[in-house]
Structures are given as C-alpha cells and as structure tokens.
Image (tube, rainbow, N blue to C red; front, top):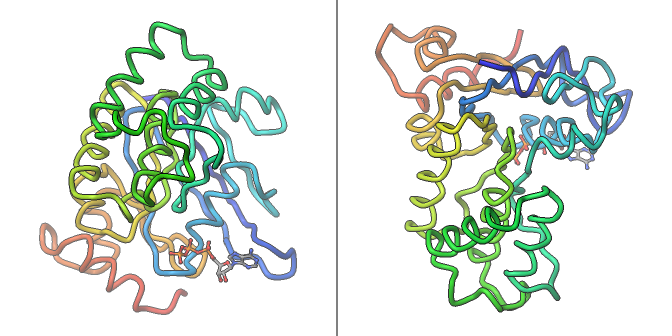
Length: 249
Ligand SMILES: Nc1ncnc2c1ncn2[C@@H]1O[C@H](COP(=O)(O)OP(=O)(O)OP(=O)(O)O)[C@@H](O)[C@H]1O
C-alpha cells in the first residue's frame, strides 16, 4: 500500500533550545487507521501541528503523498483534512455554508457534493440544522459539522484529534462507521485519542508517544512485546500503562 504520510526523524517544538519532539519516525499507509496515544503533554498535538505545516521541523521531515510542504504547498494541503479537538467554525455561516465552502476548497464535483451532503446530514442527524448558524449549535453539533466537512472532502489523509469528546453515543457510532468506510476506500487515518478501548478496537497500528519520544509502535502484539507483556495477553491500555510508567532511556 502507498505511504500517505511519512514522518522521519522529526524533532521540533516551540523553542529551538527546548525541543518537545525527539526523533519521531512513523508512517501511515493508504487504507490504514493509526492510533496516536500518549499522556497529556506527550507531544501528540505538537506532532500534528508539524504535520499540518503549522510548525517547522528543527530536524527531520514530514512528507504527505511523497512531498514536503515546501515542494508543493497546494498539493500537500489539499491531500488531508484536519479535525481538531475543539471545533473551529465561522459563527456567521450556516451548516450548509460550511459544507459548501469545504466542497469548493476541496474541489468536490457538484453532483458528488449534493449526494455526500445529504448522506452526511442523515448519518449525523443534522438535517434539521442545515440552515442554522454555527454560533447557534451545541458543542457536539459543532464537532459533528467539523467531522461532516472532513468526510465531505474525501481526501487521501484524515488527521483527527480526540474526536469523541462531546459527541453523543449515536454520533460516535456514526463517526466510527464512517471511518471504517473511509479506510476501506483507501484513505489513511491518523487519530489521536485517550479512549484506548476504542483506539484498540478500530486502529490497525498504534504509536505510543511519551515525553516527546516514540516508546513503541506497531500492532497490538508489537506494543505488548515492547511493554514486556506475554504474547496474546493484555489490552492496549495495559500495555500503555506499562510503557508510560517507565522513564525513557
Ligand atoms: N504553545 C505552546 N508553547 C510552548 N509549549 C507548548 C505549547 N503547546 C504545548 N507545549 C508543550 O509541549 C509539550 C507537548 O504538548 P502537546 O500539546 O503536544 O501534548 P499532547 O500530547 O497533545 O497533550 P494532551 O493530551 O494534553 O492534548 C508539553 O510539554 C506542552 O507544555
């Protein structure tokens, strides 16, 4: 499968004298869902900011669809969507206008746009809110609009930061079903979340970040092994606790 996201030897952070990330290397392939997990302050959001191109690596590189941001900014940016932990919407635009804007930004054909829009409104129970202004939506509804926009674009790569907070159980179910669908169609997903049981159930591989370093990555079996657990024994959560309760080398 094609590599959609490639992060190589990435060191970076908010000040050159005090990097937050140290030599972070991983990749996400087409058709894969990868779970990025770590304690508060582990560096998950900082990693995501580097991928989005909001921060420049101090060392190493990030490639999306084989190219760095500097090589072709438009191609790089249009290859992914980002769903942040806290929804960012335009207060004075309606739900429909947000979807339309995304359709234009991601060059979605008119007939595809209409079909996807209808389907998403149905799936996320947002039909009655189509004409509502973003400022008049509940927190969970705002999150649903962000997610619907991402799914409308159908890009090769989805970067999703803690998407379950604020969603009702039906919203979580719809999101997970859509992500499975998206993956089957060949998109790549990098998802950061603290809900480890869900991450374990839905992701193909996991990246455990601790104090800015990857302390384990791979399948559940590989994570268990890195945590020193027996083959076939122990959940992602148990492995995670073991990995992050030890000081890094
Ligand atoms: N804007 C900032 N300026 C300076 N340091 C920051 C900034 N944002 C985050 N940091 C620091 O970078 C480190 C990693 O933070 P980051 O936000 O990447 O963690 P995280 O894994 O996303 O945590 P959480 O699970 O709490 O969202 C922390 O030590 C944090 O204090």
